[in-house]
Structure formats: structure tokens, C-alpha cells
Amino acid sequence: MNPFPRDIFTEPSDVDPDTLANLGPLRPLAGTWRATKGSDTAPKPAGPEQRTFIEHIVFEPIDPQANGPQLFYGLRYHIHITTVEEDITFHDQVGYWLWEPATGLILQTLAIPRGQTALASGHGKPGDKTITLTATRGPTNYGICSTDFLEDAFRTDAYRIDITFNPDDSWSYDIQTTLAVRGQDQPFLHHDRNTLHRIGAAKPNPWSQILAKKNRSGAILISAPAGGVQACRTPHIVQARLQPVEKRTDSLQQRFGRPGTAGLDQHGHEPRNTPHINRIELRLLGVRVAERVRDNRRLELLAHLHEIPARNCLGQLGLGRRSRSIRYRNR
Image (cartoon, rainbow, N blue to C red):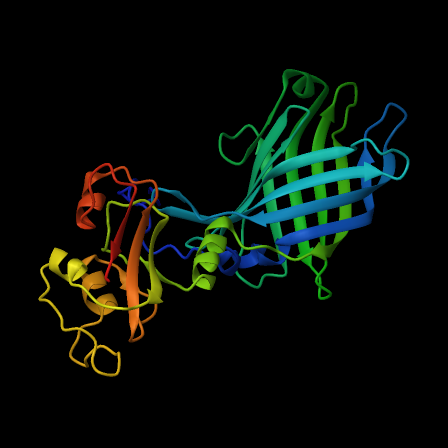
């Protein structure tokens, strides 16, 4: 039985832009880490060789990612390893850690600059103290891909990573890679272990930083609800900016068929029966308001539309087909 939905194109419409709040079991990884006592056991002609290494890892939150209805929150990471004996790079690795809240699926993608990539999978839930991911050579999903030379000389048959989150905010990993080394009868277990300590806090993902910056500048942030602007791809941001008011005109209300309004009262405030723009006109735009507009303020609505492939999306907001943004100002 196919576990996936019949509709494979429609993306989620209620995506939370805050990646750090939606990383589930991966949340403790976010940030910058360092360790000086890593242990590596690798194959050599004379037998296994063990070395101590220095490791630096950065995990950066990325914006939510969608495969149609499938939604991931994740971290982009970079691992750089040296040794006490040499300043040259001992190991370098990049990739992503991803979590799917709907299923608990955890993914690690990894790539190393010696011609090898892998996609490992596991499952977890928020608050888990341990997570385990595996990948094996052969499958087209959650597999391992190597160059011809590595396939012949140091074939990687299996990969497993066990992570433990410690009470002191550190975390430890134990990586076991099963190798078939040419000329050796038995598989070799390539073993890496380390405990990482935080040296830098996590930063918000780019979308969250944009929203926070707009909020600090006095903006009201409005999000598109489910069933609202259905043709838009995420992210869809609508911003309402408050500015001091001197007088009021009816341009925005007239555009959407609302009756004209009276001016400010003798105290410089809107009359009680004057409908607030955020509760009336923005509802006509099909968006949900995050805050109320206070009296004696002028509202400027700025609609930022990102990745809009469909005409209907622009049409619902009353924008021209080729417009990327538009500004309505109620003076």
C-alpha cells in the first residue's frame, strides 16, 4: 500500500517560518561546536591506526523545505577536522540534517570531497536523548554512492551514526562505517567517536530573520492562512507598516468596494464606527492579521510575493500579472 497522498503537488499552506521551533529531536544540534579529543580508527597496511583529532562543526537552520505535501525542517552543516600533528585538513564534510514533523523521519545527507555521498535515515520525536541513522550500499533510497576507485579499494557497505544528547548541553556521536578493503578477507569497522561542546549559539533561519527585522522596524506581520492565497508558493509574506497619520483618504477602501469613511474626530482619533483597515480590507485580501492597528495611525500595506508561478495568486490580491510587489497607502 502506497503511504503517500494522492495529491503530490500541493504544498502546505500553513508553514511556520521558525525553523528553530520546529526541529524536533534535532534542535539540540543547532549552533557551533568544537572538540579536541576525537578518536578515529582507520585501516592501514600494518593494521588499524588510531588518531586523535580536533573537530569544528557548524549547524545552521535553513528555511522550511517542501516536496509537494512533504515538509522538512532542517540544519545545514559543515564539519572541519584537523589533527594536533598537522594543520592540513584531516576530514571535511558538508550536508543537511532534516526532520519531517508529520512522520518523525530524520535524514542526514553527507558529502565528502573524496568522491562519496550518502543519505542516512532514522526516526525520532521532540525531546529524544538519542537518535540513530543508517545507510547501506545498494538501495536507491538511503544509500551510499562512491567513486570507482573507492568501490574497488575501500568499498563502503554500511554507515551508522548514534548521537547522544548529554545533560551538560554537549552531545556525542559514535560512527561505524563498514569497509571492504581490497586484500583483506574480513570487513573493517572504521570507527569515529567524539563529544562536542558548544562555542556558539544558534541563529534563526533566513526567513525568520527577515520577519524579525520587519517586526523591529514597526511592521505588522500577516500570514497567508490555509485556503487563503492558494496559488502562492511558500514563503508568502504580507507586511503592514504603521506610520504617523495626518489625514485619511478612502483609496484602499474604494478599491475594494468599501464605503468612504469620515475623517478623524476632534481628538485626532478615528470615530468608533470607523472600520479598521486591518479587520476589513485585509480580510478582503484573504490574509490573517497578526496584530491590530492602533488608532491615529496610517496603514501602509506592502505585499511581498515570492516564487509566484500562478496568475490566480496575483489576481486574488488585485495585482497585475507581472507585479512582484505593490503598495497600498491609506493617507
